[in-house]
Amino acid sequence: MAHSHDHHHHEARPDLTRNQDLVLKTLNGADAPLSAYDILDRLRDDGLRAPLQVYRALDRLIEAGLAHRLESLNAFVCCADAGCHRRTEGVAAFAICSRCGRVDEFTDAEVGDRLAGWAAAEGFGLERTTIELRGVCKGCREAR
Image 1 (spheres, rainbow, N blue to C red):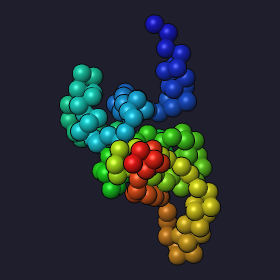
Image 2: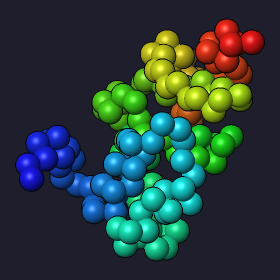
Image 3: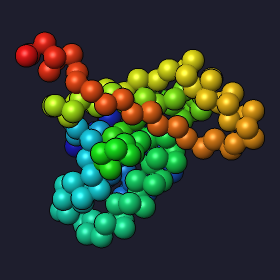
């Protein structure tokens, strides 16, 4: 079975461990943010049993810019723009629909620049920025 897609995945990120790769694939295949326990449930058959295994993998993926944690939901999504970890200025912003749970990710360089500017002026060592917008998505608003 030739998985050309998977093969490409590994070339781009040879630094991912098996667990990290599994967790990333699970996030990739999900249509909504997943909690660590959701991920654990989906990976039980792959031999992941301990929440710590999942949390470690998630931490690593977030550091690498491949995944994001949505603080308000305590859930995780894979980064829509896989290149965002190379572009530290681009701030990841997530619009979360309180009705259907849909999450849209977008990056805004202007907001990123302003935040980076503030951080520089304050001598704050910025590691990552996640902006969350809560509201009702277009689909839900039009369905009323």
